[in-house]
Length: 311
Length: 220
Image (tube, rainbow over all chains, first blue to last red; front, side):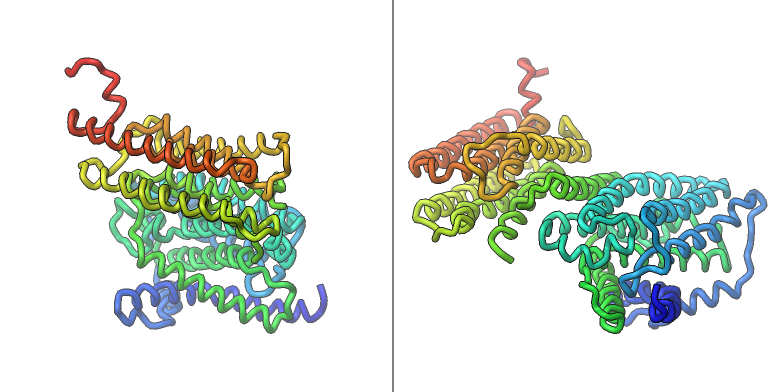
């Protein structure tokens, strides 16, 4: 790692930590624009986080340490994953061969603790949300891994920052259709993992239909701030993986690379907002079909690259 | 974007449309997906000749035109008309569920890729994807044919099966006389026409078009 890289890494890490609520704000603003409203101010998510951080916490008597650990472990896992995922530049802070597995299971660890915390409250609603979250998580994992296999073959690397780096440029030339399928699969995984329409509606407050929101009903104050921030961070990380796979940059200097990535992230948040406005949430028993579709897209892409059917 | 890349993308899209047909429960959506698939396939003979660095001959144009007229306009029109006049708009209880049939479909696609790699061909195809895509279209059409209960969906399965044969025929385009191609198109049209009449009568007689209810000989 060169000296300039180390110096550049500090503002980049700061940007990665500061960005997530802004993306949520963009999604909300897009939805408001579609509905012909003005929407909340741009800094509202930051103000919400600030408000939550200054509040007290209420713990139910039935809960144990698992309930308190849930939000913290979730946020810690996601922050650790953030060091391995390239966000603004083409490199990540750390990286080693095979770190892609670690990233995937850090996400899984975060989810597991959120689920355990939900179960710990003993509320039947939260249990229901937990069961749905786990079901959909199980079904989106094969799609994620099949997509990662294609990226690994395309870039001939097992390190996440290289898998979605400039080597993909060549892959787009030779196995373009397969890469398109991967981008489609990753988009569905992104929408599922970050609990967005059409899988889950983050704006709903009806316990029977919520998935992610229902699991965190009992959290309050700073704990809830961690959860909100964690969800936004997860959106940023998965979105970055998607964008880096979709638009590989052929090794441009940092001052072109980073602003371009920022614009792409804003674009992605707008697209997600547009998806939320243009379609309704899927019926719960139709979601597995969507996730099966994502898995099939990934499998098809893997078959196309593995059999070398492209020229 | 050269011809090769476009052809490959179109062939991959054809598989996706097949899987989309398996996943859609609305009959009208299935018919529209079929029309789109046929439209994409109609341009393949032209691309095929362009790939071999020839200017497309009259032969390819006639096949493309005939395919569009028959499979993109006429047959979907007939099928959509039946759906509109009937009360049945959805496939409600297929023998294999939608999610399961998408997975089975994906397995069939993978299988046909595996088979196509080992298949000895008389002449190397213009695109390596043609044979696996043709095989998977055939198999997925067959899957639709056997796993659905509504008569319309079964007709759709038959049509997709024929699309698979059409893709396979591209390999032999120069060897197949024009008359044979046109004969196949005509047969297909007559077949769908007869099936449309049959479906119409099934519905008039029994007020539904579930074919598996026809197994029972007596009305209960």
